[in-house]
Structures are given as C-alpha cells and as structure tokens.
Image (cartoon, rainbow, N blue to C red; front, side):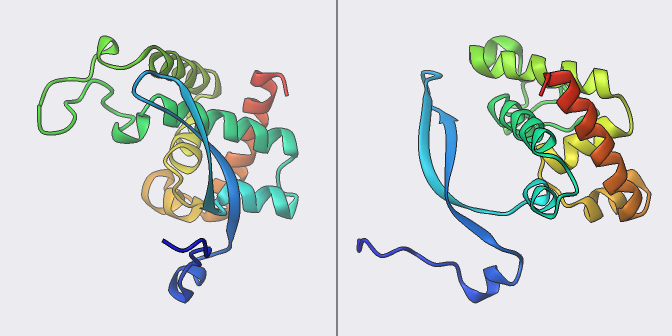
Length: 166
C-alpha cells in the first residue's frame, strides 16, 4: 500500500470536520495499553471546546469519562438494563468475564453517573459515552429542546470536572 494519506470522501466531509493524527489509546487482549494515531471526526465535545462553550477542564473531564466508557466496553449495554444478555450467547456479561481494567473503568463510570444524577447523567451517557449528538439525545431520550440539552450537558460537564478535581 502507498504511503499516501487516505483522505476522507467529499460525502464524509459534509458531516463535519476531521482532526488528523489524534492519539488513540486502546487495550490489547492482555489489558496492556496500546497507543496509535488515527484520524478522528470532531465530536460534540471537541466542537463545544473550540467554540468556547465549555472550558478545557470540562473537555478533559469528558475525555476521561469517554475513555473509561470505552475501556469498560459500555457501548454495548443500555443504561436501563446493565445485566442484559449480550451477543448471541444469551449469557449475561458478568464482572469476571471482563478484564481488570475494564471492570475498574465501569466502576468509575457508574460512580460518576450516581454523583451527577438525572438528567445530566443520561445526557453524559448518550452524548459523551455513546457519542450521540445533542440534538439526537434531546429528541429521542431527553424530550427537550437541543438548547436545553446543551445546557444540561454543560452543567453535567462542570460537575464532572469538579468531581475529577480538574
């Protein structure tokens, strides 16, 4: 394969800007961190930080929450039923079935969700964790206007930053 950079298609670029060479941390099968560079679409948090809607501390708190969310593999679960069967095995995902780092990350996410409480915790779960847009969360889950949802997210991120001591 060529050393040329694969550029996004025009269709992809219509959906928003892309930030090239973002450091991404994932974990291998032995729970060791693996760092790599990737191109990443600018999400809600990044756009809010660039506009000045949220502080750098709030953006850092959101990234910390998102990292724990991903490490804990929570994107496969729904917030309403945490022990629901996953995949085709139809067996519940138990703490002993996931790695140590994932288990600890889940504990941190659930602790934060309890501290923030509804509706901010639900907004964090969907917008920061699942990376839905504010508009999508507002219409499907929050049952409020996008402006109100944005305010809820800002308040939740402020609480999150304070909780993390940032």
